[in-house]
Every structure is written in structure tokens, then in C-alpha cells.
Length: 181
Image (tube, rainbow, N blue to C red; front, side, top):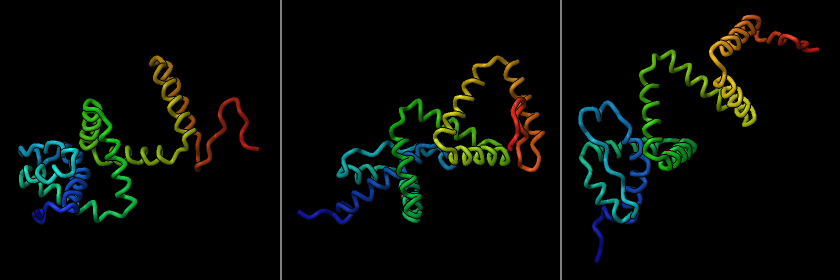
């Protein structure tokens, strides 16, 4: 018995990949879905069941998934791999973790453009740090977090004075320490 043309192995795999790529993204709130189009249910694990699942989606959901799939296929391979890694991490999150991520994303979207740019700039800086530098930053943050407000204010004031002394990109020597030879 032959299969209908849309139930070929390639079609089922393509639909599975389409679901893998688009479904987690579709579950994020979006202005177009604010009009009442609910996110689709998760795709079935078995590839042979994915075609029926895809057909069960509303025309809007299918169109959105096809659009996202085309955008994915148009990405350079490095971007595709990065997206696949992020999707794998997303799928490992439990429901409360996903809600926190969604909440952070929604808060980020509401920021003024200059504040969003500042956040993105800090993110790029963070990614540029070595593992050791990130570890030290986390330790400093934890120490700062444990301080009482007065201690924190003293640390912040010292940092402000240090920034003010910094001229032309060359940091001033720290108090009690000698400068460069």
C-alpha cells in the first residue's frame, strides 16, 4: 500500500523539524496571538504522528510555523546550530523556569530602546569574559548582595570616584597600591 504524497518520510521528518524549531517559539506571547490564537499543543514524540498533529493546527498556526521554518532554513548554518542549542536548552526547562524566562523577555521588550541597548551591550560584554572572569564577577555580585545598604553605598561611592579618576581610558591606581612601573 502506498502512502499519500504528504506522508513521505521526508514530509514527516520536515514536519518534525518544523515543530522542533517553531513550537517553543510559538508558545511565547506575541502580539499576533494576543488576538486569541492559542499556542499549539506540543508535537507528538513519534515522527509518524506528527503529520496528523500538524494538520490538526489552525491555518494561522500552520502558516506561522511554515514562516518560521522558512526563516530557519534561510539562516546561515552557524545561526541554525545556535538556535538548535537554545531550543534544546528550552526543552529541558520545567514549566516555572519557562515562565520566568517569558516574564524576563516581556519585561525586556517593555524597556525603552536605550535601556534595551544597555542590557544587550552588557550581555555582549558578559559573553566576552573568560570563565574565570565570570566566576569572579559572580563572587563579587554575591558579596555585594550580602552587604547591608550602607556597605553597598560605600562600595558604590568608591566605584564612582574610581570612574571619575579614570581619564582617557587609563585607570587610576587603586588607593594604597602603586600604579604601573
